[in-house]
Structures are given as structure tokens and as C-alpha cells.
Amino acid sequence: MSEKDEETFKSVDLEQQTEKSPEPEINPQESPSETETETDKPSTPPAEAKVETTPSTSTNTSAVKAKWTSSVEQFKLKRFFVLRPGTLSHGIDDVKSLVNPTEDGAVQSVWLMAEIDHWNNEKERLVLITENTLLICKYDFVMLNCEQIQKISLNFIDRIFHGTFCFPPHTLLKREGEGIRVFWDKLREPSFTSRWNPFSVDYPFTTFTYHPVKSANEELGRLCDIENFREQLTLAAQKAHSKNPVPGKANGVVVLNQPILIETYVGLMSVIGNLGF
Image (cartoon, rainbow, N blue to C red; front, side, top):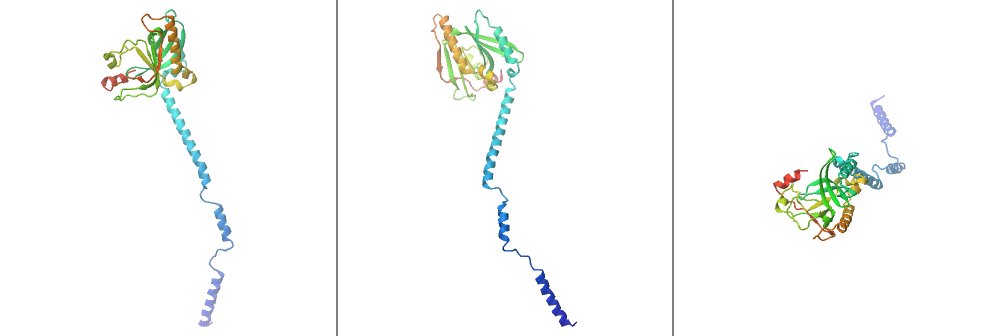
């Protein structure tokens, strides 16, 4: 075979190879269907799916927050020994046994309160309303014994204030919420020494507010109900006034809805006072 023939053969052979192995092409009739198939399977979820997932996320977040809040509240309540099984009923039985039926009369009701002193300290108290007396008991729920009892004759109670707490304009000690204040000697005002002494008990009135465990269960909610306590105390005091009036003292009880002033001041004694109890 001559060289000319070989060149002719080679060129023909290359052209045939080119025709036999062409570049892959997309069939114009099949591409739309393939495109539609790809379009039918989107890579991202539709807007409706996103909208549905958002509420579930917020619901889960709210549930977590509610659970966390409940856990915090339960942790706070655990520091009160009054919540131990049988402790409260034991304390009520103890203070009832200290009532003198001859002087105090029969027990009308028992309450679990938080007493607030003039330096804004909270003190846990069991309060009893009898036929003739209001008894404020300092009870130790750890050792299960009554440490102190303050007795106020119901016929000496002359005023009962109920409302929100208020404070002097420049104090740093604040308190939210509401309570009641019971007065039994409107002719006597606290002395200057008593006002500045955080441990003074020489006051002609006492102040109560809700005990922190009031929301623990239904029974504690009844025992800590300030409004019901005020109504029963007012009724008992009015009966005591009519039954045994005090000579030279106006009979009856004045009930007023007004802010309750707590005279707290900032200073060394106030800091010491609020560290106690």
C-alpha cells in the first residue's frame, strides 16, 4: 500500500470514528419531562411546612419555660419545713392546746400567715381567732414547738386596713403585693426609739400578708387566704365589742381599704434587722 493510500485510509477511518462516537446530547423530547420530575421534588420544604413547624417550636419552648418555672417554684418551697408531711397539722394541734377556753373561748379558725414587722422582715406565724382573742403564735416547724404567743383581745381591735404596701420615697427596701394591718390601740403611737429599733415589738398594730406556700396545694390556699381572714376577724371583733365593750373606748371596728405604709429606712440598723429572722 502506498503512502497516499494510507493517508486516505486514515482520514476515512477518523471520520467514521467521529460518527460512531458522537458527543452525548440531551434528547429535547425527554428533557422537559426530566425537568418536570426534578421540579416535582423540591430540595427545600414549602412555605406551608415552615409555617407548621414554627408553632410547634414555640410550643416546645413555652413548655420548657413552664417546666423550668415550676421547678424553680418547687425549689423555693422546699425551704419551708411547714410543707413536710404532718408538720402543719402537728403545729396546729400544739397551738390549739395552748388556748385557754375560759379566757380566750373556743377556737373559731386557724391561719398560716407571714407577719411583716416595721423593718419589712417576714416572720412565719400561726394565727388563731377565738371567741375573745386574736393569738399570733411564733411556731418552730423544725423543732415542732411554740416559742412565743402574742394575745390581743378582740374588743380592743378598732381598725383594720387592707390594701397594697407602700414605702417612704427614698428607701431602697421595697415589697410588692397586698396585706392587712390590725390596730388595737389608736391612742398610742410608736415612739421614735421603737421606729428605729429593728427588734422592737412595742407596736400597737401588726401586719400580715400571704404566706409564700399559699399556692402549694388547696388546703394551704385556704389557710393563707388573707381576704377570708380579714372578714372573719372583722366579724369576730364586732361580736366581741358588742358582747364585752371597753369603757371609754368607741365600740366597733373601722375597716378601710388604703395603702399600708411600712416605714423602712436605709442604714446599718436596717441591714442588721433584715438579716435576722
